[in-house]
Length: 341
Ligand SMILES: *Cc1c(COP(=O)(O)O)cnc(C)c1O
Ligand code: SF4
Image (cartoon, rainbow, N blue to C red; front, side, top):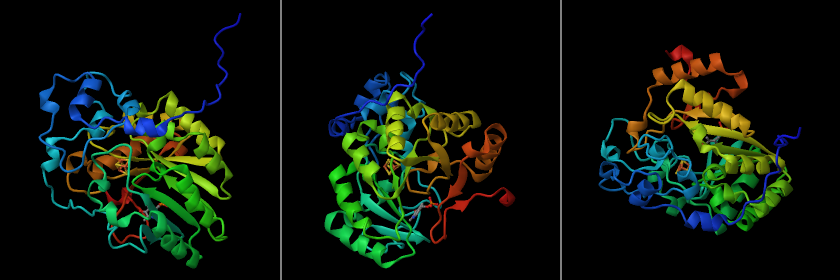
């Protein structure tokens, strides 16, 4: 008897990421309409706190219809709560202003330099430090890349260049190619790391031209994705991840621990299992950066440690992310350690 074939299908090319980008939902009422909550006036915030709503339609389609507490919806919907100030919260929570080593280049940690390659994102996540970062001045675009690359060239201790942002994949592939052409001439740089949420929120971005560029890079390649909930993965994300892996990239995921979104052990375990099903290893579970407007997402360290302890008991060790926090002036992300309890 012949049954439906379980053979894995080859990932199909995805086209038209610019169109998908432009087509994003930017109006709260449109979003509520799209998720079947159009009747809920109480979900329409007084304003967007200076950080506009932005969510790609494909991502909105993964939200549960009619559920005002959907974990994907809560990540993007502006809320009146964002105006509630909290002690310890500021606009530059991770000290990036002080760590600048050249235009757009942050060299805080040994061996790794991070280039803010673009200030744009396809999605605006309410908990993100980016809501306050003055990208206009700091983006290492075009001419400024030369300055950033000159710093990397002059410091042979830098083994790895990290492209971050914003989202570096918001740049056209030919722009990325311009940037990495200079890297090939620097023998001390052996790895390129890309921090991006696009393969998750706009998987169309992982198109043929991008995959060809990535595959041809004469460097080790690491792509650190950002997904906070298993529901962010679907077949289109799986296909994008398969294409990235086929291009030779190691895939990792960083998540942010967010109250009401993923702050229970079942949800986190599902995230770790689901990302691995897409070929992505859990890397970091971040405690929230204390940025103004995000305090309602905070999970206390005690609760966070308890969650990770439960994950350790339930999952293979390689599926348990490291619980960390970024603090200004630290030589690395700081592990939130059990002995601190
Ligand atoms: C987070 C970060 C890195 C990368 O740290 P890893 O622990 O290697 O992931 C590098 N540079 C800066 C400025 C960072 O903020
Ligand atoms: S930088 Fe990442 S977390 Fe922040 S808004 Fe962009 S995609 Fe979201």
